[in-house]
Length: 339
Image (cartoon, rainbow, N blue to C red):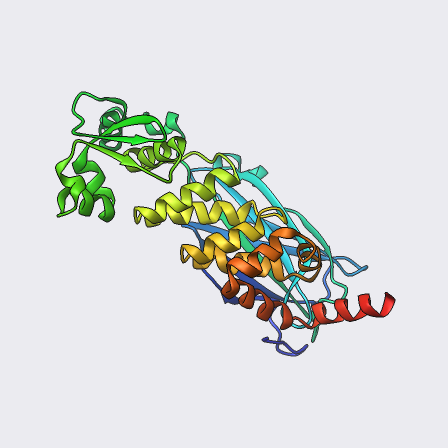
């Protein structure tokens, strides 16, 4: 972990960057005023982190959107890192809309109020900031421009007149267009224009997929938008996206599953991430599950035992990440001692 001395320390710098997050190292320089980070770009938007430390060593954190023409919907989570650089159980997660510059006097701010106790090393503390930007386009936005290419293609989704292929899924039928499917998915291209048997039929019956999931898959293919209908739905949609090599849709599902992760969903997300090579979801799930307090609760669940049997490789990764945390070892030791 990088550290700073009292003589040459800068107030803040970005210590580590991943696909969906930043780790900030903040120097505890005494100050009664609110301090700001340099502007940084994430998800195509400019942001600034602000903080203030109280006399009781509690930190207030704000994430501000630099004013722009459009509002931004995002879910942001602040997680404190402990003295050993591990994610602690102390975090704040908030979902909100950051207003456009028309409302810059009321810029969206995310407030995290957390204690610095046991989190300071060499007069510095580290905060892990994860940002999930909701890029979903609403249907009203989609149809504002009547001459747009997107609308014209999406109209095909609503019309059956020119369809040249039909899918039967879970008892329902869905007309579609070979050229559109092939242009969006290499798997559909191979199936519909290659040497596979599907290329010579006008109706394809799909197994192992729910009709509402396939309908949403088609909606994304034709409109490049998708609805957020909850964790279970997003898990099934991720599987479908992976099946047809729709990488952007799969990333959208990964983001949603990370954003909405709880103790009730993390184990199923771990198994799903491993089966479908979702590196972002796997890493986030491992960090979430390996947090000492979370892991102690998860070990009491039947799903945890099922994971041990069905996905030994995932269980090995989880064990390795948890065992690397000295704080976890201390909690287990203290629990045994008290018992």
